[in-house]
Amino acid sequence: MNKKMYLQKHFVYEVKMLIKAKEKFVSTEGWDQIVAVESLLLHGRNIIEFLFYGKKTNYVRVENILNKNKHKKLKEKFSENHLECFANDYSDKVNIYLSHMSIKRDERSLKWDIKEKYYNILNAIQIFLQILSENIMTNEVVKINNMIQKELKEKSKSQKTWEIST
Image 1: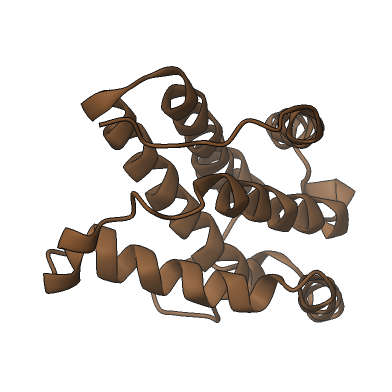
Image 2: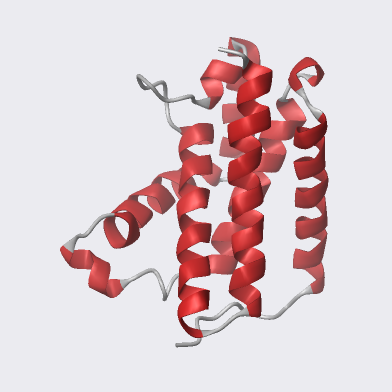
């Protein structure tokens, strides 16, 4: 597998979709906002599964990208930042309440603290990018790193809550 190409094409896509969905979510109302939040949560889940889940046939995970030492360092950083429990809980909830037609789907994701979840995902991405080897960083990966830095700076400026308006 070409690690550089994977990050360039698939990882960059997921991060851009996450950020674009957030932008749409905070700027719309009603059904457009619901579509945006579901997109945000689903792309967030894809990123979480890439960063936190172990190897699986036909899936690319972070351990396919990083060497063993860097992967160990990444897991330590995630643990220091209390992101592992968040990641497991997040993916489980998205699967139960959102991405599958389950009985629990009626309870919806609309009562979740979406802002907190969004910034936790960005923090996890930022940690991954800090550990990533420069030899597989592409211009597009550098661009999303800059986008994340900008998003994290805006978090500290904004005290506004993100709520669903239906």
